[in-house]
Length: 206
Image (tube, rainbow, N blue to C red; front, side):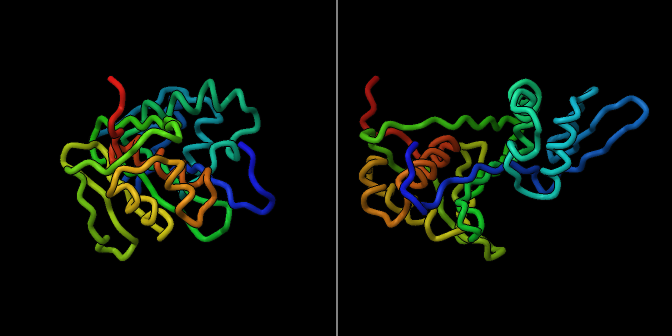
């Protein structure tokens, strides 16, 4: 996608949930990840998977920075993280060094997250069952629903602006025009909300 000179871009980050512990066995070359829904065992994971998980323990990372060969990302890291999805936090930020925009946090043992680029002319809105509260830890707002396997933490006002636009059905193109954000960033925020179930298509064809 084309970006205007100096325009901020989206940054897609991955990390392990704070309550996940990683145990490494030198004897049988395994990794044991223990989270709120029990252990997940990786037998003889590729070195690139080990390195990615090591970095993800420390905080959100760009996966491309954790590997030397792109093929490792496709063949080893992404399949492993798909299996570990209930333990993985997905975070969206901008390359402006002001911190993350939002994070999608798993709240269920079945919590796959698939990002889909929505058409710019497709109306999107907030479902009635989504509840927005202020984080008790002072970390922004939280979107959650008993019907969904994720919760979304809005870390910055920019993410809240986009979310509030969806209180009335709106197209990504209209939201991008109305807000003082790069078009791609607005679209990515909506994409993350949609992937987490916090936004739904309105008047979509059957």
